[in-house]
Amino acid sequence: MFSLRTVTSAGRGLRAFSTARKMQAELAYQVFGPENGEAVRKPILILHGLFGSKQNNRSIGKALARDLKCQIFALDLRNHGQSFHAPEHNYSVMAEDVQEFIDQQKLDKCVLIGHSMGAKAAMAVALRSPERVSALIPVDNAPVNAALKSDFPKYVRGMQKVEAEKVSKQSDASKIFEDYEESLPIRQFLLTNLIRSEEDNTLKFRVPLSVIGRSLDNMADFPFKESDNLQYTGPTLFVRGTKSGYVSDDTVPAIKKFFPNAKIADVEAGHWLISENPEAFRQGKTFCLEPTMESRANDMNSGGEVLGMSGNESPIGPCCGHSIEIHILIDSFIDNTCHSRHSSGRSCKGWCLVDFLWSHVLSVGRLTDNSGMSIYREMCV
Image (cartoon, rainbow, N blue to C red; front, side):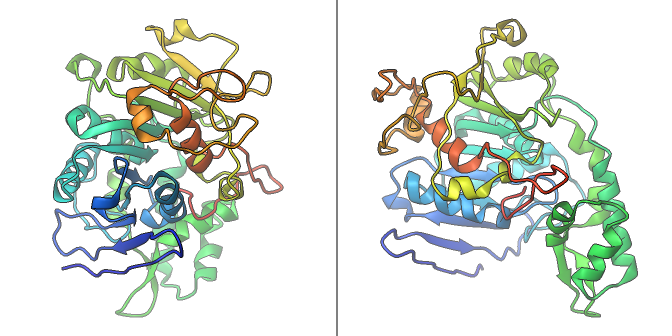
């Protein structure tokens, strides 16, 4: 059984529904876009990061569904949001969950977008079942074993302290959490996981803290080794925050080993780059991908390409000096072919979709508070 909620957007026919899952094997989700028979593009699955949920991706899901005219599925991964709790929390089981979801929804192929924890889960799905993935966009994570930043264990301790104090107001929870995280925006994001207990009306976290706490080492690992000889050869775009450190140049050989057709795009941002400057994409502001002036071919080991933001080159794609319909979308990304030539006279070489997703999902501009910390908004994942 699941509850159905239909939302109609005037003139666009968008819909959205959420599931209330009963069986452990099923993931809670929200879907935006046309009915399955009316979709004109392959569906997109968006996977959130640690302590996130499908709610973080509502705005971007609606925007992509409207503009791409395809179904956008925002998932709650296990032990997050409204999905089931389970004692195991690692990328292998998360990949199995997503693969089963794809089967349950009878999806042929889909594009996977994942941030942080969701990025590694998406990579694992692509390597395990490449035939199910038409394109892959991992955001600020790499297919390597790497220690998590010390903030995450600290966040778990802070959450446990909030529960131990049995507070009934979110303001009290935020006050307690100040000892564990100074940034108000980050605290607000973490505290979106608070729910009210039916037993004593106090606040508790909907994520199982004991499971997450003992699984943090798993979040640092990657379930495959380069010696496993697994590859996903489909179109792949790795997006990394230049101020993050999660996807260093040292990880590029592993990226190219697992994903030989991968491109890497640099965003001047930290780890939470998806949420930075949400106003820009909401206003339809576009950003373009440019090949960096400095070649990193030696780092890529196989002739790969690093993309970045540059104001010195003629723009490529829909950010050229005129307005074009975004009709070269998922399929052009998959085919890596674009037949349009824009006002600059240059072909976009199949990157119209990447540019479009960048402007909607990976807004490059930054909205910061006085300390320079990125402000976390609805899409922080």
